[in-house]
Length: 294
Image (tube, rainbow, N blue to C red):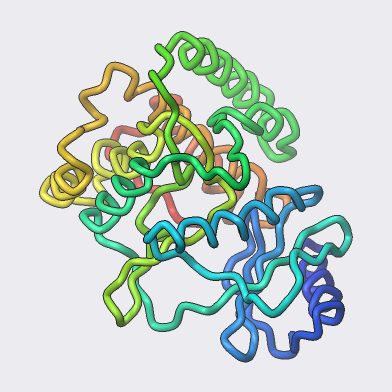
């Protein structure tokens, strides 16, 4: 059974257990988590195998952030959740209609507010590890040749050592863990809303600044003016001037490569994109790079 079929079966089973109508469900995304839009303004989020604890924490994080004054996607309160089918947790959320991705300035303001929050008292956040899962994806990738696999493992090993050598922050702060413009959306109300809460953790603040920084430095997806508006909204701190910037940037870009690798068995486009991304990391393609979304 292919992954899309498997996810649809999980959705149907979870909806039956929760008393929710899943007929006519529309797939929004089928990445690390599978996302579906259902009737009645409901969004279903299907997590990875064995991630029930993460799903439970997402609901707590949503309630905590909304209470703290950071508007965040809301779980449906009338349905017990998560419901687990085939060891995959399924959670139910309110649909945010007619929205756009945030601007860099809006993202910078949200991240600044998030980083200023004291950690929650009612539950514990995990410590964020940007390296988790990377090596496993390289080793298990079925569609790359021996030379590329060896190079990626060596590259990972170097980055792991460099990351371990970074000076520890004086105190970890609350971070989103996947802070990019698509994870902060703006509906017609004009009030930005935070999405994708599975990586909210305690960690190094610079990690939340890396994605948009490399969007500017390595991909030119945003202009200099847009990047400066992000820096200003965050409070003036430019992560590209931090000595550890390149280490975190390289880890983030390696994560994006291994995400493509994780999809290659099911998608020829992902396989092509993975090969292109590896060539970029190896220096065979000059920056600014152009990577297609998956």
